[in-house]
Length: 65
Image (cartoon, rainbow, N blue to C red; front, side, top):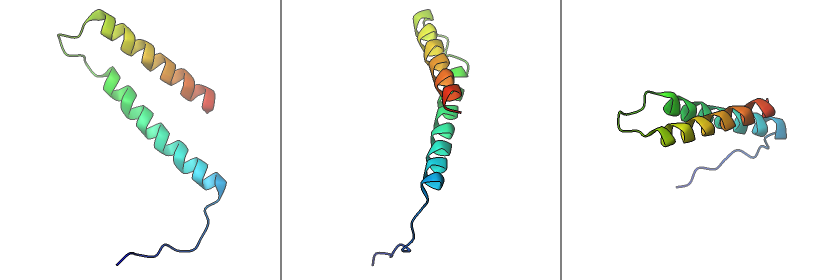
């Protein structure tokens, strides 16, 4: 039997804040994974690519805060 959802509306600000927090947590998790110690077989080009991605993610987050 499906559960009925309450008949309420969420404000646009609350939805935006919730989505922003979800994105923040996801980005923080990605950055943490990228900054952890790399396995010994990781090549220098891979590390430079990851550093570049991390910098772009940080810059994008700063621009949106």
